[in-house]
Length: 239
Image (cartoon, rainbow, N blue to C red; front, side, top):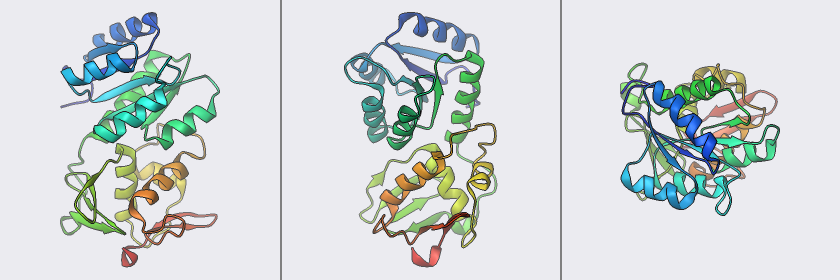
C-alpha cells in the first residue's frame, strides 16, 4: 500500500470536535480513510472496528490522557503513533517518546506539516525491500532475537516484544554497521529521518527504551554501547 493511498486508515483521537472535523476533511481529501474518536472509550470502539495504520493522539485528553492511551496502544498493536502536544511542552514530547510514540507535533500546527510527518511514519512502517542482507535475517541481541524481515523482536522464550517503527529502524542501522560508532546525526540519516528535526534527547530516549528490551542489564549495556562524546555502537560478539 502506498503512502496516502485510499485505504490507509488514520484514527484521530482529540476531544475538540472542530479539530477532528478539520483533520477529517483535510486527510480525506489526500486519500486517507479517517476515523474519529473524542476519548479513550471511543478510541477502543474504533480499534474493534479496524486497526488503523497510524493514530494521531492528543496528549491533553480529559480522563485517560494521551500518554496513557499511547501506552495502551503500544502494548497491544503494531501501528504508528503521533502525539499532539502543547506548543513548547518538551516534557510531553519526552514522555511521549518514552511510552513509544513514533513522532510528535505541537499545536497549533499547519496541516501540511502533519501530513509530512504522517507520511514519514508510514514510510517507516513499511518493510524495506532493498539493502537487506540474506545472512542477517535473524539477529541475536542480548536476551532477544530480531527477525529483520518480519520486523519482530522476541525474547528468549519466543514471546514477541512490541517495538516502534523508529526503534526497528535504529536497530537495523546499528546491526548493519557492527562495531562502528554511529553519531546521532548519522543514525538520523540511516533511519531516513533527515526531514525530521527532533530535539536532542530523542535518539537517546529510544536507545534507552531498546536497552530495556534487549540488554541483560540495561544499566551496563553490552549490545548497544555508548561511546562517550561520539555516539552508539552495536557489538555483535556480546549478543
